[in-house]
Amino acid sequence: MKFEDLLIQNMDNLPSSTVKEAAIYALNGKGKRIRPKLIYAVARGYGIDPRIVDKLACAIEMVHTYSLIHDDLPAMDDDQLRRGRPTCHIAYDEATAILAGDALLTQAFYLTSCATDSYKINGYCTRALSQYSGAAGMIYGQELDLKAENLDLDLNLIKKIHFNKTGCLLACPLIMGCYAAEKYDDAKTWHEIGLMLGLAFQIQDDILDVTSNEETLGKSNSDLENNKQNICRLMSIEKAAAMMDSLYDNVKKRLDDIQDLQEELDNDRYEDDPKEIIQYYFERLISTGATDPVKADLSNLSKLSETLKKIKLSNARKELTNKRELCIICIK
Image 1: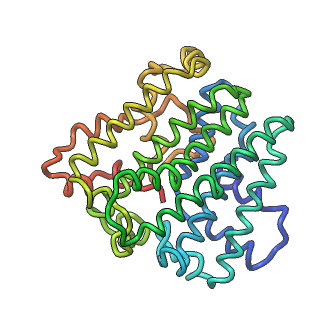
Image 2: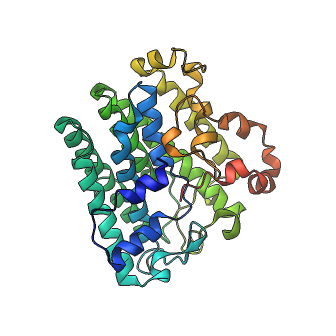
């Protein structure tokens, strides 16, 4: 079953309503499903049946979608375009959009509570989803982001916002994947990897905010209008791209610490050197014509770092706009 079908199927237990219709409308947007792809990739990296994480993958995508619905509301970013379509509160109305987001969030916890046959795995994953999506994670990052509007630019604050707002929801599927494989001791490493990926992703997002447009991104480009903390207002695009590149290199180093993952990658199903994992992570995991998330694995990862190094930074604005594989990294 394709992930898109699986995602909607996991809403079947809810009664028909306008709120359910609006929630499905938001889920059906042409997102890149990065977070589900991450959890499927980790599952395959550990050598477990990827079907084990089906409900977990749906749960993390539901939480991400709920966060986008609420993020777009007039009280927050007041955006009218998301994933190439009108935002949920524009397509329906503000009250329905709020309830649709609430419905997706609560449905996600329902799914993690019955995700596998193991109460221990379900409990650990439910706790992780709560921790990383709540007021100690993503929501905390959103609060920092809102309060930082019109404040003086601050690199440490930008990092703190990105670690929480984006990094936590990238760390969560990685950690749930390792819990599903019962590799509990690896959770700390996946946590660090997720936060670094989040910062790298948001640096790319900041670059795109100053180099691209709404048509290319498929979403409203409102961060600069709202005076959000943007790293490209603090440093040059060249330096921001170099920081992003360094983060990806550090992620690759941290992946070397996951011994069981390396052992799985040494078998005949995988051709890549584990030390090169992160350089391949994004062509398949992050592309607009992406392979179904259910099929994502660690053996088809893009050499994003190499792509970045080939860009002539002196002409970064033009290159970053034209490079499809870079433009689509904007995870929203």
